[in-house]
Image (cartoon, rainbow, N blue to C red):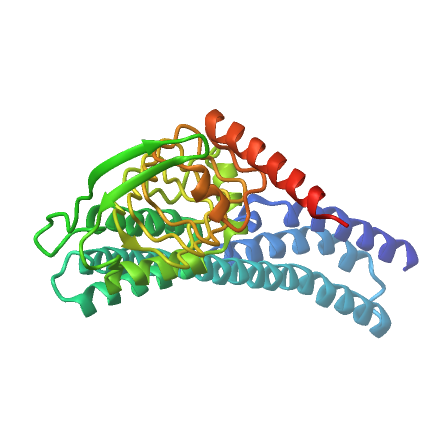
Length: 343
């Protein structure tokens, strides 16, 4: 009897390997394929156990052993089928979840794109409150989707400033200064400008709102984006008309202000750190207590030593060569004067 059992076990191992690796069971489980696999199992069982049952002694113990073997034999393909079914169900659920997530992502992306278009459209409306709502809506979009919309939002807002600064509702310039006289002495250039009764023009509320957004931007993230964009400026106010505007306390850090017209503008206490003001028109601009650290003022027109001395911080500031020489002479004279006053 022991030899019979050993033969049965060996037959089970060989047949199990053939059945498990059968192409029918490698496919996703379904009722027809399972029935076909069951038929294969039945044929194999009959082929294996026909000689075994004929050779058996017919005792109750032999029949019980054969029955146990049959139960285990039938359970193997059934367990394998249930495992396959569970795996395929899990894979189907995972694919459904991935498809659902992708659909949600596409829907959200479409909603943000639609919101961006509508918010940008509000900037062109006539009502001041409507334009301000558009400004803050764009800021919110930049916060929610910075990877896709931070740069477009900032460029849209800066484009609005360039287009609307120092203009009335009809798009006409608010003011143009007229130079009356110019005198040059050993110490500095002195400019005389014709300025009307209003000392400065206050920023319109929509432009002031944009400068608030510019002030609140995350410079670390913006600098990281600039590195990815090969140093390309994100927010540019180049060639904007800022003539005689009141820009007190405005945050211009890191902005491109190349060729911007600041004639007669009030830049007192403004933060211009790291900004590019090359070729900007600074005629008569007020830099009292302004932060000019690491600012590029090369080839800026209208710049005077007096303006530079008004500033609070001029560390690493790049200025035209003639201004640099005058500042060096001024600093030397100032140091000599202090030395003479020392006890």
